[in-house]
Length: 187
Image 1: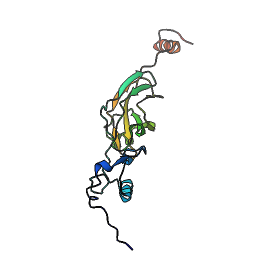
Image 2: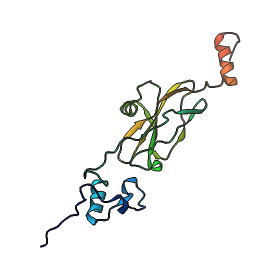
Image 3: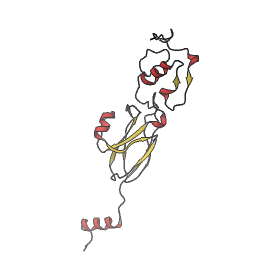
Image 4: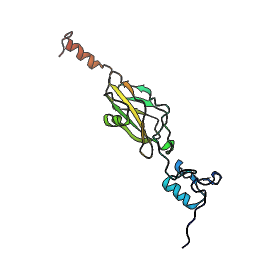
């Protein structure tokens, strides 16, 4: 059996001019090497040209503008929007967003939001806005958004507090308040 020899430049990686692009749709699979075993190394271990043979670290999604923007507020719903996040491994359109709300204030860490918040929208891809519905009138809500990448790493946007509008009095409510105040004799 013939002994296997690898090229002398394999430790430093192949010549950058020998790297070609393949359209496989994921950032981590955009390069292929000339040598077949380098392709396997790249696909399985995440090796990069000139790298050490170790997979490159995946960081959490980046939120350049973490502010949630308040839109329309009514007695039972709040409309909000935010800027899309980015990530070093997951395409922007594949990042998922979860929206949480609570009537109690809590810190904006991912674990606190997940522990204390109520999920309104869970893991929706390419979401940059929503309307949170089913809320109570004249109530302050604390709203947060968490973005997740394909490997499960998460980043929280800056939370915001919003108070829903007061419920308008109806004619019936007005009639009852006069009766209870003793101003009128009511049946």
